[in-house]
Image (cartoon, rainbow, N blue to C red; front, side, top):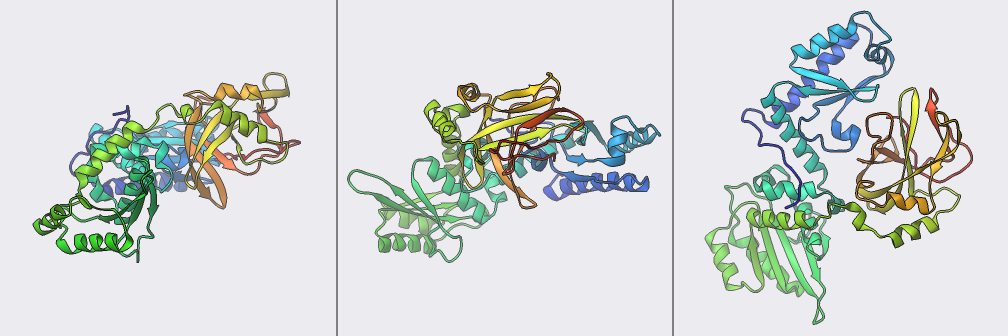
Amino acid sequence: MTGVSLPAFRPTGYDDAALQARVTALQTAVELWARQRDMWVDCGFQSFASRVGAEPGEGACVSVLHFEGPLYNMFNGTWDDGSETSFNELISSLGYEYELSDHVSAHFYALDPTLRTAFDDYFHWQWVCSLIQPDCADVYEELYAHFAHRPEDLHRIDWREFEVLLFRIFQNQGFTAVLGPGRADGGIDIRLLQRDPLGDILTLVQAKHYASHRRVGLEPVQALFGAAQADGAQHAIVVTTSEYLPGARAFAARHNVQLDLRTSADVAEWCRTATAGIVQDKSTLTSPEHVRKILGQLGQGRDPRIVHAHTGYGITTNAFALILKETKHAALLMELPRIEISGDGQVGWERPALDDRAFAGLAADTVWRARRAVDDGRDFLLGWPPPIPCLGWTANVFQKGGLTGWQMRGPSRPIRQTSMEGARSCSKA
């Protein structure tokens, strides 16, 4: 097993609805307090995962308040009318504490250890569910690790997510897998093809996402066996989150070469194997030759394989990265060193290194995974890149499309674009 850690099991009495109600109550109280003081201007709430693009981790952030205007003045010490003291008293009375992240957002945390443990589990689960996508699990070991440790949580996902999870597991095992449409699929949820010198082996898979008390009977098992024979498949597998009735098991025993019945225990074992197979050092997922090939293809025109993020309020600090691999839902990024074009060490212009200096980013701590997201028509890459110096937090939202020039850094001015095209940029979140 890898070093992936899971939060402690959730204490009793804290189901998803109850915890979400607590989050909503906190947000409502904060907004009401601000509106009563005419301070609710350019403000809003986000989850930690949606704002940062990563799992909250231990001591999970319950909610993120982002702000400008009067709240910015209050939190940053330019408005001393007693409002901050009143706000602190409100948050404490609700059972929370907060810390400022980047001058324009505040992260809230539960004070009670039991409640904090419950939130850890709740937000970890939300994160795991967000990873159940057809083409992103190859870089997210948390997805497999969670179900390897907690197969009972297979009942918490829906039937389609269960099919997608199985699809990703079989891909991880080396099969060429085709995921069915989910409806009107003739009872075949996944088709697996295993290449063999003596002839390709076709396996049909049917997923039965049943409650634990509802066992799979003979009829669906016979139906899948018949479909396998009709399609010329060499093997068939039924996978359920429940168990099988004796008749189904007896039928499978008579056809044990062609028919296999599996349960959540098998899925957990598959996930353990998949977790162990996920590469922790993401830089080993590519090669210097591949990086050199990409760099050689980059021209002076716009190239969406270079991405850019910047952060800071009153100061601009840049980060650049190269897309090494990209799918519909995920991407693998490599940090590109920043080169100062002009300036005095504090204020100036910089661009990404696209020559041999770029290979400094091909290392374990500067190659990372990112998820894709679309917001207001803009395409973003969300993840954990290397920390940007001087700010004490991580810039992690890379927007696709838009960089058209050298990037300015320094105080009191926004990003300005000038002469060179070449990357996807990110405006301040």
